[in-house]
Length: 281
View: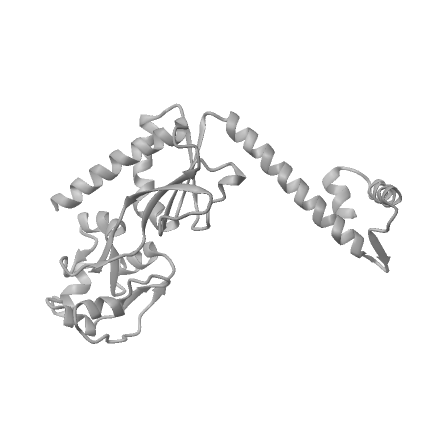
């Protein structure tokens, strides 16, 4: 009651009287008034669930109306690794090409609820199937071993895949393209060496950059680090295909919305340029 009074800028007594008036109107008790505390009755708990659901729907609808009338703000949602390693360094070109939009980037790996109404476009790493949304595959990728030049030298140059049995291996937790599968591809026994594990690909790559071992670098995420010499590809031809890929995701029926169209066209050009540079290397 005290917290409710503070939030509503009312007195404690005013809130208590409103609760009592509501109980009189409904003809049931919503609270059991115990010593120094309140508990919801069964009727109170049921009513609470209905009120919470109704207020949530009202908030979502209000946000949807605001979003539809906010023609300047473009909200982009991206997964953590893709945002840090690929998207963020390129967003300035989207802003320069489309000054009519204020670009807001939300970074999360959680599923996007387009029904909630505030995200315009999302970039996700997945199977290409997303509930109640349209998806366009923008890039696939492979994985192969990477490390720093400084790590490779004292390990004898690492000229053969079999040499990795002597290395500390960095793992990305949750990926099906594992070190075990890579060694199987090379027809080598899996050494089962102990090594650190990370839940995000960007963290695995950063660990390799710090010299903590050899990571299975995802081709899209490590491209800039390879180009700038922070990492080296040990066996560029020894690539393992990844089942998942990067997708542009948006609300069903919104493919011609100005924000979606602008972002899609910009993204397509960025992907073309990225692919051409990668092919040239």
